[in-house]
Length: 549
Image: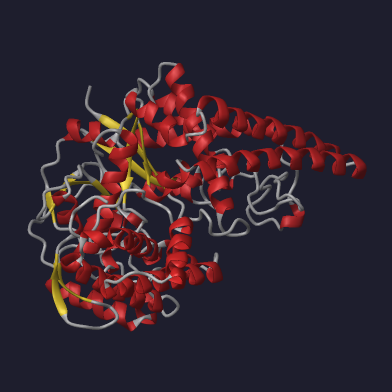
């Protein structure tokens, strides 16, 4: 049979929130993602496995997320969170009985059973270790797990190749520690790519030669990566945001003058290609299938019978209403009806499967590669995991079958050598979301700490390992793409500004202590202990000189 595949790639990431707040910003992000996405998807994959239908899906976990999900602090807090949700459902039931809201009262039983099932799944089946449960699926050849950058650093804007290299190395090391094998593929944070060229910092400075992101991934022996579709089709993502931040426009204009494709070949998004000059394979995100799942207005998640994300009952924050209509005011939302959802899921899944066959109908061979944030399934779109179950089940034995990226590479054997331009999957396809008037100050601090790390790379002594280890933690945390993203989108602006400033100050202070090369005062030792307790990710770190400490 001619090889035609559907390869789903889910990307799982939450910034480091342990010991950094609970609600509205902090640990609740992690609890919600675990309860509404990671566990429901795990249940879907295991369900398919028991039915003898390998899901053959790809899922990435960022190292910073792996660390948090493996933490005893998370396990203890998550069980309390799930029990709290059960108690809220019971409390809401009493309230709805008093107010005569019979339909809403019935939904409290739905939620109580749902969270009780998750608590049992986490405590019994997972033995309080979600990462290990996913490892079992990979070891059983059911799914493929990818790694990513240590703390989701935004690669194109980092000023040093070594900073990208360290993010990648830590990501690979952490993956091997928890999954017991080398990672096949790598998720680029924000699907953000930059080729090699004489790069000038968007904040000013001299032009310096830089390696392409693919070259660094190749050096670190990663098997493949993924990019947004516009990078393959031309890459000139000149949105209006370039005019709003002149430094970005200058950066793009400089790149345009130096970019010269090595070969002009047929650039089909349905086949893997080789990046020039590294020859590292890459896949391209499929837009047609993606829009059906990403869009809350024109896609499946906007169906009126699905659960409304934004309307919640307080106190407690439980959701009891359906979308009703995408343009309906929150006050006009009707109660959720679980019994009516199955019919809509069946229709949407059938439509999607038909569209996949139609999309690949004229292709002799190829793969539709769909990239999504894992949290889209369950957290944002409550019915998403069940929809995915139906799609994967309907594709079993079909002309287009679900398949992992690794097996797609084996079957489709990329040959075309492509020079990719610069960009991301952010709004406009470039970097504006992460670098603009509101976030430039973060990059100033990141660049300062990057320079300090290069100094330590050549001067560090073994007796400073403890300080160096904490310095690298703070550097990694400062580089997280989440802080500028959350500032730009006003999602958690104050929280993110405080976090970025905090990690910078800690890194700066640690650098000064290392340079001083003397004993710490009692107060300084107390500060170090506090930072080690709050920012305790990565018990083992690949430090700048290549050692593991």
